[in-house]
Image 1 (tube, one colour):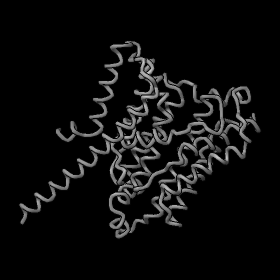
Image 2 (image 1 turned 135 degrees about the vertical axis):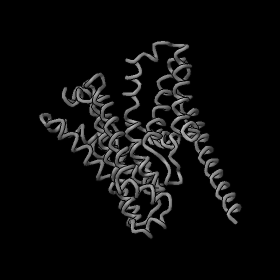
Image 3 (image 1 turned 45 degrees about the vertical axis):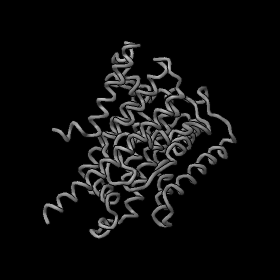
Image 4 (image 1 turned 180 degrees about the horizontal axis):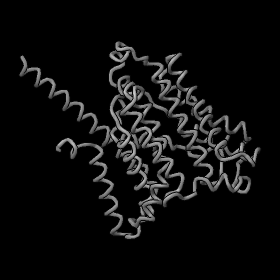
Length: 326
Protein backbone atom coordinates (compact mmCIF):
# COMPACT_ATOMS: atom_id res chain seq x y z
CA UNK A 1 0.00 0.00 0.00
CA UNK A 2 2.85 2.35 0.88
CA UNK A 3 4.41 1.70 -2.52
CA UNK A 4 1.15 2.63 -4.30
CA UNK A 5 0.76 5.85 -2.31
CA UNK A 6 4.38 6.80 -2.95
CA UNK A 7 4.24 6.02 -6.67
CA UNK A 8 4.71 8.76 -9.23
CA UNK A 9 1.30 8.04 -10.72
CA UNK A 10 -0.43 8.56 -7.37
CA UNK A 11 1.52 11.76 -6.68
CA UNK A 12 0.53 13.10 -10.08
CA UNK A 13 -3.12 12.22 -9.52
CA UNK A 14 -3.03 14.13 -6.25
CA UNK A 15 -1.23 17.07 -7.88
CA UNK A 16 -3.79 17.23 -10.71
CA UNK A 17 -6.68 17.01 -8.23
CA UNK A 18 -5.20 19.81 -6.10
CA UNK A 19 -4.62 21.94 -9.18
CA UNK A 20 -8.21 21.45 -10.32
CA UNK A 21 -9.46 22.26 -6.84
CA UNK A 22 -7.37 25.43 -6.69
CA UNK A 23 -8.58 26.63 -10.08
CA UNK A 24 -12.21 25.83 -9.22
CA UNK A 25 -12.04 28.29 -6.31
CA UNK A 26 -11.49 31.07 -8.85
CA UNK A 27 -13.58 29.66 -11.68
CA UNK A 28 -16.02 26.85 -10.67
CA UNK A 29 -16.97 26.19 -14.28
CA UNK A 30 -13.46 24.87 -15.00
CA UNK A 31 -14.24 21.51 -13.34
CA UNK A 32 -17.56 20.99 -15.05
CA UNK A 33 -17.59 17.74 -17.10
CA UNK A 34 -17.96 19.53 -20.44
CA UNK A 35 -14.92 21.70 -19.75
CA UNK A 36 -12.84 18.76 -18.49
CA UNK A 37 -13.64 16.93 -21.74
CA UNK A 38 -12.44 20.01 -23.63
CA UNK A 39 -9.22 20.07 -21.58
CA UNK A 40 -8.62 16.38 -22.30
CA UNK A 41 -9.26 16.98 -25.99
CA UNK A 42 -6.82 19.91 -26.04
CA UNK A 43 -4.21 17.72 -24.33
CA UNK A 44 -4.73 14.72 -26.63
CA UNK A 45 -1.93 15.63 -29.11
CA UNK A 46 0.50 15.91 -26.19
CA UNK A 47 -0.68 12.55 -24.82
CA UNK A 48 -0.18 10.88 -28.20
CA UNK A 49 3.34 12.22 -28.67
CA UNK A 50 4.27 11.52 -25.03
CA UNK A 51 3.44 7.83 -25.47
CA UNK A 52 5.72 7.62 -28.51
CA UNK A 53 8.46 9.58 -26.76
CA UNK A 54 8.18 7.33 -23.71
CA UNK A 55 9.00 4.29 -25.83
CA UNK A 56 12.11 6.03 -27.20
CA UNK A 57 13.31 7.28 -23.81
CA UNK A 58 12.89 3.80 -22.32
CA UNK A 59 15.65 2.64 -24.69
CA UNK A 60 17.96 5.38 -23.35
CA UNK A 61 17.41 7.56 -26.43
CA UNK A 62 15.46 10.74 -27.16
CA UNK A 63 13.50 11.98 -30.16
CA UNK A 64 13.60 15.76 -30.54
CA UNK A 65 12.13 15.59 -34.04
CA UNK A 66 8.58 14.59 -33.06
CA UNK A 67 7.09 18.07 -33.45
CA UNK A 68 8.83 18.58 -36.79
CA UNK A 69 7.62 15.13 -37.86
CA UNK A 70 4.10 16.17 -36.85
CA UNK A 71 4.38 19.36 -38.89
CA UNK A 72 5.73 17.67 -42.02
CA UNK A 73 3.28 14.77 -41.86
CA UNK A 74 0.42 17.19 -41.27
CA UNK A 75 1.50 19.28 -44.25
CA UNK A 76 1.68 16.17 -46.44
CA UNK A 77 -1.83 15.23 -45.30
CA UNK A 78 -3.11 18.74 -46.06
CA UNK A 79 -1.45 18.79 -49.49
CA UNK A 80 -2.88 15.34 -50.26
CA UNK A 81 -6.33 16.62 -49.40
CA UNK A 82 -5.71 19.68 -51.57
CA UNK A 83 -4.56 17.56 -54.53
CA UNK A 84 -7.17 14.79 -54.14
CA UNK A 85 -10.25 16.34 -52.45
CA UNK A 86 -12.28 13.15 -52.88
CA UNK A 87 -9.75 10.95 -51.07
CA UNK A 88 -11.40 9.16 -48.12
CA UNK A 89 -10.32 10.08 -44.61
CA UNK A 90 -8.98 6.57 -44.05
CA UNK A 91 -6.57 7.13 -46.94
CA UNK A 92 -5.46 10.48 -45.48
CA UNK A 93 -4.88 8.82 -42.12
CA UNK A 94 -2.78 6.10 -43.76
CA UNK A 95 -0.76 8.66 -45.72
CA UNK A 96 0.00 10.76 -42.62
CA UNK A 97 0.75 7.81 -40.34
CA UNK A 98 2.80 6.04 -43.00
CA UNK A 99 4.82 9.15 -43.81
CA UNK A 100 5.51 9.79 -40.12
CA UNK A 101 6.57 6.16 -39.75
CA UNK A 102 9.09 6.55 -42.59
CA UNK A 103 10.53 9.66 -40.92
CA UNK A 104 10.81 7.72 -37.66
CA UNK A 105 12.56 4.89 -39.50
CA UNK A 106 15.12 7.36 -40.84
CA UNK A 107 15.95 8.36 -37.27
CA UNK A 108 16.08 4.72 -36.22
CA UNK A 109 18.41 3.67 -39.03
CA UNK A 110 20.82 6.52 -38.32
CA UNK A 111 20.96 5.59 -34.64
CA UNK A 112 21.12 1.83 -35.29
CA UNK A 113 23.39 1.44 -38.30
CA UNK A 114 25.62 4.52 -38.01
CA UNK A 115 25.69 4.56 -34.19
CA UNK A 116 25.16 8.34 -34.10
CA UNK A 117 23.97 9.70 -30.72
CA UNK A 118 20.16 10.02 -30.79
CA UNK A 119 20.16 13.65 -29.66
CA UNK A 120 22.45 14.57 -32.58
CA UNK A 121 20.37 12.60 -35.09
CA UNK A 122 17.04 14.05 -34.03
CA UNK A 123 18.35 17.60 -33.76
CA UNK A 124 19.51 17.26 -37.34
CA UNK A 125 16.34 15.66 -38.67
CA UNK A 126 14.23 18.19 -36.77
CA UNK A 127 15.81 20.93 -38.86
CA UNK A 128 15.64 18.87 -42.06
CA UNK A 129 11.94 18.13 -41.60
CA UNK A 130 11.12 21.81 -41.05
CA UNK A 131 13.21 22.77 -44.06
CA UNK A 132 11.45 20.18 -46.18
CA UNK A 133 8.10 21.76 -45.37
CA UNK A 134 9.41 25.09 -46.65
CA UNK A 135 10.74 23.48 -49.82
CA UNK A 136 7.43 21.72 -50.47
CA UNK A 137 5.32 24.83 -49.94
CA UNK A 138 7.74 27.71 -50.60
CA UNK A 139 6.62 29.06 -47.23
CA UNK A 140 2.93 29.10 -48.14
CA UNK A 141 0.15 28.02 -45.81
CA UNK A 142 -2.68 25.58 -46.46
CA UNK A 143 -5.68 27.39 -44.99
CA UNK A 144 -9.11 26.31 -43.84
CA UNK A 145 -10.92 27.29 -47.06
CA UNK A 146 -8.59 25.03 -49.06
CA UNK A 147 -9.44 21.95 -46.97
CA UNK A 148 -12.53 19.81 -47.50
CA UNK A 149 -15.25 19.68 -44.89
CA UNK A 150 -14.66 15.97 -44.23
CA UNK A 151 -10.93 16.58 -43.71
CA UNK A 152 -11.64 19.20 -41.04
CA UNK A 153 -14.64 17.52 -39.43
CA UNK A 154 -13.10 14.13 -38.63
CA UNK A 155 -11.20 14.97 -35.39
CA UNK A 156 -14.17 17.04 -34.15
CA UNK A 157 -16.77 14.30 -34.69
CA UNK A 158 -18.16 13.21 -31.32
CA UNK A 159 -18.65 9.58 -30.30
CA UNK A 160 -20.21 8.90 -26.90
CA UNK A 161 -19.51 12.48 -25.82
CA UNK A 162 -15.83 12.54 -26.82
CA UNK A 163 -14.32 13.94 -30.05
CA UNK A 164 -12.43 11.53 -32.30
CA UNK A 165 -9.18 13.32 -31.38
CA UNK A 166 -9.69 12.37 -27.74
CA UNK A 167 -10.68 8.82 -28.68
CA UNK A 168 -7.43 8.52 -30.65
CA UNK A 169 -5.48 9.36 -27.49
CA UNK A 170 -7.51 6.84 -25.48
CA UNK A 171 -6.95 4.14 -28.10
CA UNK A 172 -3.18 4.69 -28.19
CA UNK A 173 -2.97 4.67 -24.37
CA UNK A 174 -4.86 1.36 -24.19
CA UNK A 175 -2.90 -0.19 -27.07
CA UNK A 176 0.50 0.68 -25.63
CA UNK A 177 -0.52 -0.31 -22.12
CA UNK A 178 -0.93 -3.80 -23.56
CA UNK A 179 2.18 -3.67 -25.77
CA UNK A 180 4.48 -2.50 -22.98
CA UNK A 181 3.28 -5.06 -20.43
CA UNK A 182 2.19 -8.07 -22.48
CA UNK A 183 4.51 -8.35 -25.47
CA UNK A 184 8.10 -9.36 -26.08
CA UNK A 185 8.80 -6.06 -27.84
CA UNK A 186 7.54 -4.05 -24.86
CA UNK A 187 9.77 -5.98 -22.48
CA UNK A 188 12.68 -5.51 -24.88
CA UNK A 189 12.31 -1.72 -24.68
CA UNK A 190 12.70 -1.88 -20.89
CA UNK A 191 15.59 -4.35 -21.10
CA UNK A 192 17.56 -2.30 -23.63
CA UNK A 193 17.26 0.86 -21.56
CA UNK A 194 17.79 -0.83 -18.20
CA UNK A 195 20.89 -2.83 -19.11
CA UNK A 196 21.86 -2.98 -22.79
CA UNK A 197 24.75 -5.37 -22.15
CA UNK A 198 22.53 -7.86 -20.37
CA UNK A 199 19.87 -7.43 -23.07
CA UNK A 200 22.40 -8.27 -25.77
CA UNK A 201 23.61 -11.25 -23.72
CA UNK A 202 20.12 -12.79 -23.67
CA UNK A 203 19.71 -12.33 -27.42
CA UNK A 204 17.97 -8.95 -27.76
CA UNK A 205 19.20 -6.91 -30.71
CA UNK A 206 19.75 -3.52 -29.01
CA UNK A 207 20.10 -1.53 -32.23
CA UNK A 208 17.03 -3.08 -33.83
CA UNK A 209 14.98 -2.43 -30.69
CA UNK A 210 15.96 1.24 -30.76
CA UNK A 211 15.00 1.31 -34.45
CA UNK A 212 11.50 0.08 -33.63
CA UNK A 213 11.20 2.64 -30.83
CA UNK A 214 11.92 5.49 -33.24
CA UNK A 215 9.61 3.94 -35.84
CA UNK A 216 6.73 3.81 -33.35
CA UNK A 217 7.38 7.39 -32.25
CA UNK A 218 7.40 8.51 -35.88
CA UNK A 219 4.16 6.72 -36.70
CA UNK A 220 2.35 8.29 -33.75
CA UNK A 221 3.74 11.71 -34.72
CA UNK A 222 2.45 11.23 -38.26
CA UNK A 223 -1.04 10.33 -37.02
CA UNK A 224 -0.99 13.33 -34.68
CA UNK A 225 0.10 15.54 -37.58
CA UNK A 226 -3.12 14.90 -39.49
CA UNK A 227 -5.28 15.25 -36.35
CA UNK A 228 -3.54 18.54 -35.42
CA UNK A 229 -3.76 20.10 -38.89
CA UNK A 230 -7.37 19.05 -39.45
CA UNK A 231 -8.49 20.20 -36.03
CA UNK A 232 -6.95 23.67 -36.31
CA UNK A 233 -7.64 23.80 -40.07
CA UNK A 234 -4.24 25.22 -41.01
CA UNK A 235 -0.84 23.85 -42.03
CA UNK A 236 2.41 25.84 -42.18
CA UNK A 237 6.15 25.55 -41.56
CA UNK A 238 6.26 26.45 -37.87
CA UNK A 239 3.25 24.45 -36.71
CA UNK A 240 3.83 22.92 -33.24
CA UNK A 241 7.11 24.82 -32.93
CA UNK A 242 8.83 23.95 -29.65
CA UNK A 243 6.22 21.31 -28.83
CA UNK A 244 8.92 18.65 -28.51
CA UNK A 245 9.94 20.26 -25.22
CA UNK A 246 6.43 19.80 -23.82
CA UNK A 247 6.53 16.17 -24.94
CA UNK A 248 9.80 15.46 -23.15
CA UNK A 249 8.53 17.35 -20.09
CA UNK A 250 5.36 15.23 -19.97
CA UNK A 251 7.43 12.05 -20.00
CA UNK A 252 9.90 13.16 -17.34
CA UNK A 253 7.16 14.53 -15.08
CA UNK A 254 5.34 11.23 -15.54
CA UNK A 255 8.28 9.28 -14.13
CA UNK A 256 9.98 8.16 -17.36
CA UNK A 257 13.67 8.11 -16.50
CA UNK A 258 15.93 9.91 -18.96
CA UNK A 259 18.51 7.21 -18.13
CA UNK A 260 16.23 4.62 -19.71
CA UNK A 261 14.52 1.45 -18.54
CA UNK A 262 12.00 3.09 -16.18
CA UNK A 263 8.59 4.46 -17.05
CA UNK A 264 4.99 3.55 -17.74
CA UNK A 265 2.13 4.47 -20.04
CA UNK A 266 -0.05 5.72 -17.13
CA UNK A 267 2.85 7.90 -15.99
CA UNK A 268 3.30 9.49 -19.42
CA UNK A 269 -0.48 10.00 -19.63
CA UNK A 270 -0.65 11.74 -16.26
CA UNK A 271 2.43 13.84 -17.02
CA UNK A 272 0.73 15.10 -20.18
CA UNK A 273 -2.54 15.75 -18.33
CA UNK A 274 -0.66 17.69 -15.65
CA UNK A 275 0.83 20.00 -18.26
CA UNK A 276 -2.50 20.18 -20.09
CA UNK A 277 -4.36 21.31 -16.99
CA UNK A 278 -1.69 23.94 -16.31
CA UNK A 279 -1.88 25.23 -19.88
CA UNK A 280 -5.66 25.54 -19.77
CA UNK A 281 -5.85 26.83 -16.21
CA UNK A 282 -3.36 29.70 -16.40
CA UNK A 283 -5.52 32.00 -18.54
CA UNK A 284 -8.54 31.24 -16.31
CA UNK A 285 -6.77 32.50 -13.18
CA UNK A 286 -5.32 35.51 -15.02
CA UNK A 287 -1.74 34.24 -15.05
CA UNK A 288 0.31 34.89 -18.18
CA UNK A 289 0.69 31.78 -20.37
CA UNK A 290 4.40 32.58 -20.53
CA UNK A 291 4.60 31.28 -16.97
CA UNK A 292 3.82 27.84 -18.37
CA UNK A 293 7.43 27.57 -19.55
CA UNK A 294 8.76 28.37 -16.08
CA UNK A 295 6.32 25.98 -14.43
CA UNK A 296 7.14 23.21 -16.90
CA UNK A 297 10.86 23.75 -16.40
CA UNK A 298 10.48 23.69 -12.63
CA UNK A 299 8.41 20.53 -12.82
CA UNK A 300 11.09 18.85 -14.94
CA UNK A 301 13.83 19.75 -12.43
CA UNK A 302 11.74 18.44 -9.54
CA UNK A 303 10.89 15.25 -11.45
CA UNK A 304 14.53 14.56 -12.34
CA UNK A 305 15.55 15.24 -8.74
CA UNK A 306 12.93 12.76 -7.50
CA UNK A 307 14.17 10.16 -9.98
CA UNK A 308 17.76 10.66 -8.89
CA UNK A 309 16.79 10.43 -5.21
CA UNK A 310 14.87 7.22 -5.84
CA UNK A 311 17.89 5.69 -7.56
CA UNK A 312 20.17 6.67 -4.66
CA UNK A 313 17.77 5.19 -2.12
CA UNK A 314 17.66 1.96 -4.09
CA UNK A 315 21.45 1.82 -4.08
CA UNK A 316 21.65 2.31 -0.31
CA UNK A 317 19.16 -0.48 0.32
CA UNK A 318 21.15 -2.90 -1.84
CA UNK A 319 24.37 -2.06 0.04
CA UNK A 320 22.70 -2.55 3.41
CA UNK A 321 21.36 -5.93 2.35
CA UNK A 322 24.82 -6.91 1.14
CA UNK A 323 26.33 -5.92 4.50
CA UNK A 324 23.74 -7.99 6.42
CA UNK A 325 24.34 -10.95 4.12
CA UNK A 326 28.07 -10.78 4.85
